[in-house]
Structure formats: C-alpha cells, structure tokens
Length: 117
Image 1 (cartoon, rainbow, N blue to C red):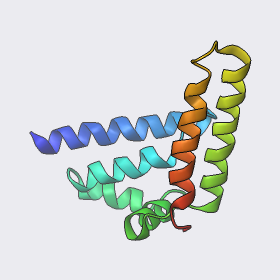
Image 2: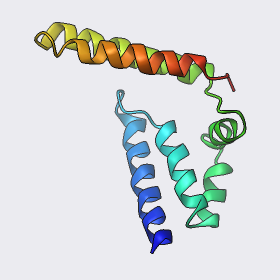
Image 3: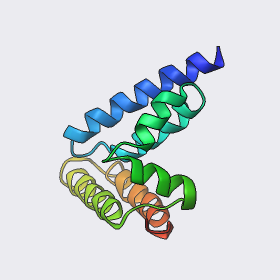
C-alpha cells in the first residue's frame, strides 16, 4: 500500500514538474527531486531513469549529496519571487500584498544559504 502511495505521489510530482517546465512561476526541479524521492521508495527503475536524465539528473544528485541548488536555479527563484512581488504590489490590496514579500524573504533566504551545485 505504501509503495503505491509513493508511486502515485511520484507521478503527480513529475506531472507538476512538467507543467512547471512551461509555466514560468511553477518550479520544475523541486517537483522532479520529490518525484525521485517517491520513486526511490516505489520504483527503482523510474528513480534510475530520473537520476540518469540529462536535464534533471545532476540536480537530483547535487541535492541528495550536498543539499545543493545551482546558481541558475537560485537566480530563477529570485526572479520568480520578484515577479510575484511586483504583481502583488500592483494588484493585491493591503495586507495581502505582503504575503509574497514575506515568502520571498523566507524562501529566498533559505535558497541562497544552500550550497551551490
């Protein structure tokens, strides 16, 4: 039963990552890393496919080995935070406009303290 849960969660996460590949504000790599985590517990074949994938494998290995995020990933996250803040300031009323600012401060601080890989 647990294996099936991880398999479904892995596919859902991989699907969200695929959507994130075309939508600018939805991240791709964190969903792919989570999918690899789930597949490691449900399907060694699918996990190996992700770890060996030319586009995502290096990110998965860097995260597993060192908790590392690439410089490009950090910059992309920062740009997404900036865009979210800009949209919130332009369109959201007070105090809701503060939500992405707080999220960017907390999330961005955490992202930029991770090692680079």
